[in-house]
Length: 212
Ligand SMILES: CCCCCCCC/C=C\CCCCCCCC(=O)OC[C@H](COP(=O)(O)OP(=O)(O)OC[C@H]1O[C@@H](n2ccc(N)nc2=O)[C@H](O)[C@@H]1O)OC(=O)CCCCCCC/C=C\CCCCCCCC
Ligand SMILES: O=P([O-])([O-])O[C@@H]1[C@@H](O)[C@H](O)[C@@H](O)[C@H](O)[C@@H]1O
Ligand SMILES: [Mg+2]
Ligand SMILES: [Mg+2]
Image 1: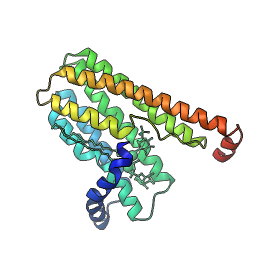
Image 2: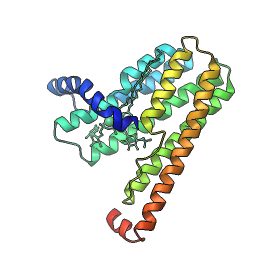
Image 3: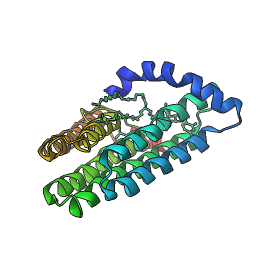
């Protein structure tokens, strides 16, 4: 949902940066890779050290690369299958690192296994949400539906984790992660149902012909 409603705003916000990066010879792929590395460092270095606030700021500085790389590609009138693949694949790396970093801290120094377990559940369900869409699209269906797409998952965990680093009671993060896990599960069901509905509308054979 955020993706659709906020895309215009963030495109306008980051287009000058995208244009400048292209001007100095940076490629969209480089932005995708460096942005992912930045998120991974923030999540797997700062968070396990208990630096939830500074880690969130560090991650946030890099996570918007996922917006910028596409803007750059469109400015170059690119946007091919390779970029699509790289962007989506590295999104999973960033998402996995983010929730893993939260889990590591709360399994260790943060001494709060319920939060750590909730973070792992969110990690797994988030991957299933994205895989369902990828598999659907590979079979000629669409499945970019659901109440917990990537932007929603990222905003919710980053804002609350960041605020937890500023002293917000940890129970808020636990409740947030439980709600996010529930929303992610609902999104998986939504995507399964939307693909099932399409499969009933398009008898087997047509979708596989398109996917072939
Ligand atoms: C005070 C306490 C600390 C709190 C600090 C602040 C916390 C953090 C707050 C917010 C940060 C979270 C932001 C989440 C970012 C979301 C990233 C995301 O999901 O982006 C989604 C899209 C981009 O999607 P995608 O990658 O699919 O599209 P692209 O445009 O990249 O196109 C892909 C195609 O491009 C081609 N291509 C790509 C790459 C490549 N290398 N080559 C290519 O060719 C190819 O064809 C690809 O197919 O982004 C959007 O859609 C924009 C919407 C993003 C939504 C952001 C939501 C943030 C909103 C509010 C934040 C609230 C903060 C409040 C803080 C208050 C704290 C109390
Ligand atoms: O919202 P979601 O389906 O979990 O995840 C999305 C992927 O399905 C999509 O392939 C990618 O381009 C988006 O950037 C986002 O990562
Ligand atoms: Mg992107
Ligand atoms: Mg992406």
